[in-house]
Structures are given as C-alpha cells and as structure tokens.
Length: 257
Ligand code: CAA
Image 1 (cartoon, rainbow, N blue to C red):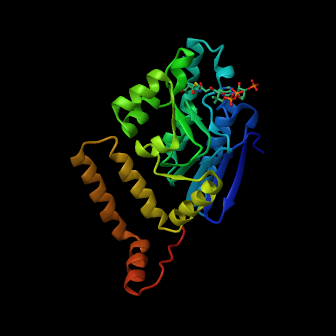
Image 2: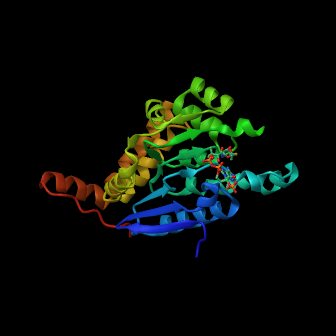
Image 3: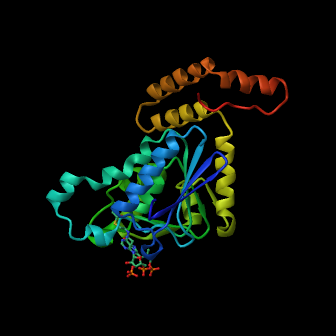
C-alpha cells in the first residue's frame, strides 16, 4: 500500500492525489516512486482513459524535498540521477492532467509541467524558487517554463524566484483553465471524463502529435501529424465516430483490445 499518495478511480478516470501534508507534498524519493508506480498501473489499465495528478488545497507540491537533498554530494547525485525517476509521467501514453491548488513550486511546478495540461484553482501559486536555495531548476523548469511562457517571464521567474498567481498563470499560458478552488476538482473530473470517453487510440496519437511539436521542425511535425491522422483510418474508432455523427447518435468507443 502506498504511504504518500491516495488513489481513486471515477469511472474511466484515475486520480492520484499527493498526500504528504506535513511537508506540503515535497517530492521525496518515496513520494516520487509511488507516483511513478501508480502512473504505470493506470497506463496499463484499459479501463482508464485519463489520469489526474493532484495535491491538497494548500499544495500541489512545494518542490523537491530540500531536507532530503541538503546533504547530497555531487558524485552521489551524478550516479543516482534522482530526477530521472520523476520522468515516468513522460512515458505515460494516456492524457495526464495536473490539477493544481495552492503551491506548485520548484519540482512541483516542474512535475505539473511534465503533465499534458495544467488546470488550476484560483488559489494556485506557481514558481521556480530554486535560486533562493543557491541552485536552479533541475526537472525541466528552465526548459518547459520557457516554452510555456516565453523567455522574459521565464527569466523573471527563475532569476527572482517569485511566485505567479493563477490569473498570471492563465494570462501567460502556463495553465489552460482556472476554476474557483471549491469546484476545481469537480471540473477536473469533468474534463478528464470527457477525455476518457473519447477514442483512447485517437487521444494517444493526438498527445503524441502535440508533443512532437516541441521536438521537431514544423515540416517534420506536420509529416508526423499526417501519418498519425491517416493511421486512424485503420481503426474501428474512426468508423464508429463518423458513423455516429452521420446517424446523429453519441459514439461508443471500445476499450483497446
Ligand atoms: N522540501 C522539504 N520540506 C518542505 C518543502 C520542501 N520543498 N516545502 C515545505 N516543506 C516543509 C517545511 O519545512 C515545513 O516543515 P516543518 O513544519 O517540519 O518545518 C512544512 O513543509 C510546512 O512548510 P512552511 O512552514 O514553510 O509553510 P508556509 O506556508 O509558511 O510556506 C512555502 C510555504 C512558501 C511553500 C515554503 O514552505 C517554501 O518556501 N517551501 C520551499 C519551496 C522551494 O524552495 N521549492 C523548491 C525546492 S528545490 C527543487 O524543487 C529542485 C528542483 O528543481 C527539482
């Protein structure tokens, strides 16, 4: 049984809730390992079509565990490469939504940015405060933050270590939507249920294609998209989705066999 996460399923939606309240969900090795194992389980479960990663009202996660990192040496971190274990989420093929309330700082912000989209409560506070600790972001912050919000704001956030509220995060395209804190989880579940009701194959390939936009030229990205789009004509889901439209009914997509 995991000690630092709570796991729920709501129909075809899997929810992983970080649950280390005494440390504001600081991402220690145990917590990161438990998140990774559960992500792998949900990814392999054909009944799950979308995953939500969330925290508490006070904190999504206040960063990597500073107390655990404090005494680590360069040779030790070089060999252990502890941040690599955070990246399981990047290997999940199903859509993963980060639902953020309260603090998403340092590694917490970076973990949220590794997810496919971020929605947040109006209480959310994002930041890359590692500079205050004499270090810098180490789980993708300088790269994903910059791609999301642009160079000037990324420099501002990473060099001053200041926090950004939900309104600024939405304005800056760090998050896709902001909800009142009291309804954020309900809204996250609605979004995830909608995603989970679609063709799992189409969402897998859509995610793959959007992610390709960050790794390739436009020409290569368009070629990737075209090949993936055409491949969907070999699926039962394409036949069902288009037949349902023509017959004026709701499509019913089968779980991947
Ligand atoms: N690591 C370990 N413990 C943490 C933590 C972290 N990142 N963030 C908070 N905690 C602990 C605190 O030490 C405190 O524990 P104790 O009660 O045992 O002292 C508990 O959580 C509650 O925290 P505060 O009392 O500080 O709560 P607050 O409401 O006054 O402040 C906060 C909240 C502004 C988030 C503040 O806790 C804070 O600044 N946290 C650190 C944020 C940070 O620097 N994150 C970056 C970490 S480095 C990193 O993430 C590297 C990377 O890129 C991978």
